[in-house]
Image (cartoon, rainbow, N blue to C red; front, side, top):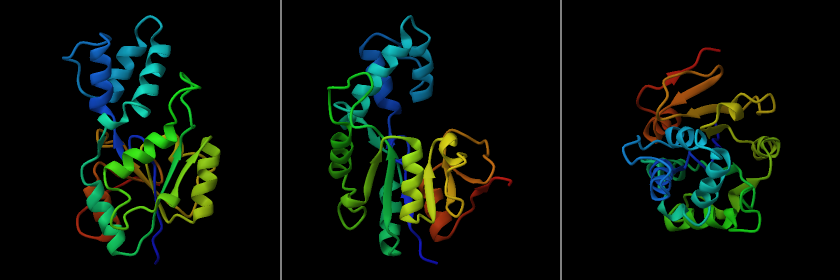
Length: 211
């Protein structure tokens, strides 16, 4: 069977844990002893007075001008190389507006994301074709794109995407959640890119959700 692999971008290709922690510490919003985990940082910032707006401002920096400090998830490049070796095209489909809600006239988030991928070699060696990177303005548009591309597999970190009624029913749903052991109905839980590589290309056990 021909594989056509779709990937989300934020928190799937890119890890922001260390970046959000560093940004919040620099601004005096959290103590440096707080765990280096995006969700933990988010909850701590939101608990502050005016915390929601402060969190949105941090997101605008992290996804824009600060993205150069973010990291690839370990194992991603090896996964992409396995896709290339198997002649399995890779598509990036992200729900990402061009400008952050907290900075509507600010940095071009699409350009920042593309620049991140280029700097980290994701467009090299046939890994991802830049023409196969799609930024969609809404979740519904993202789901339509996944359908129209005919993705056989899609990797995402958000349960609300994978469980959306509009998710293409013939696409295998791969839930990427390094910190989670919980299962989502009808999805495959994976905690690393090495595990996803094993799932698609053999060797190794993976966790299955109950339908």
